[in-house]
Length: 141
Image (cartoon, rainbow, N blue to C red; front, side):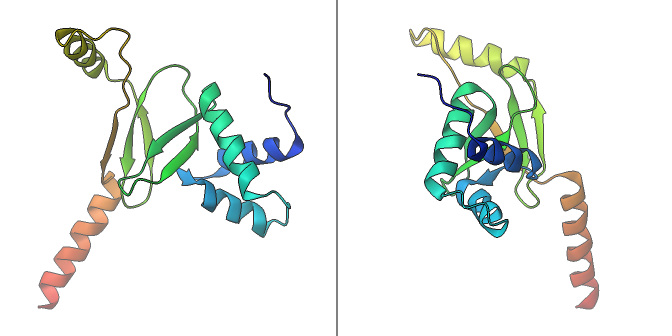
């Protein structure tokens, strides 16, 4: 059954597109609440779930287990590099991962295998900031 594209769903879509990196439903709802939209948390959850199922949003589990969402900018299957500090996200193609996933599944008799790969680390800017901070601490000792 097709979902109606209500103004509330459209506003959730716009807020997700405006968000920097992956955000939680609660964080997105807080933004919408601060704008006095009157959009409820349940509506935000439903809209995000629908967007993810349609491929309009990427969804992942944070290292803490929370569901996070991001407006999808690449059509088709892809993976992400995600900065643990600032949330910068880079969509990547990973052909070696695709080959490995198919071969590993096949070696265990699995067919129609699907996978999700998200790599968390520190982006170049956050790495440089951390190194500067550590260097400053060592110099102050």
